[in-house]
Amino acid sequence: MKNGIKVQNEFFSVFAVHNNSGLKKNAFFVANIAKKNIAKSVDRNLYKRRIKSVFMKHRALFYRSDVLIMPGRGLARLKNFAEIEEILLSLFNLLLEKMK
Image (cartoon, rainbow, N blue to C red; front, side, top):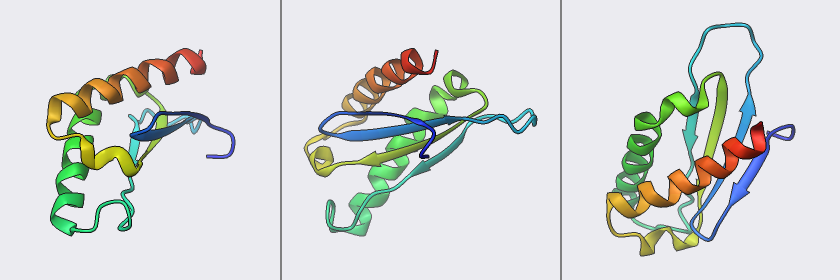
């Protein structure tokens, strides 16, 4: 990820690297939530599922790119899927502008 592009806000940091492997592969995705940010594993897994769902819904934006999403400490303040989707989409758009 050293050669990639990073955008962030108080809730998420999103890293992306263009994949030039020559394979016709879609985006590779990783969501990493630290235990010190969200203590209960049930809540961590809920947020991972929500983040993954947003990414899969908008996967076509990142054709041939690898993406790492790292939630921050403010993630616990986001209560529903719509809030997470709105914030991630704004970060995805910023990231795509930087990748051009």
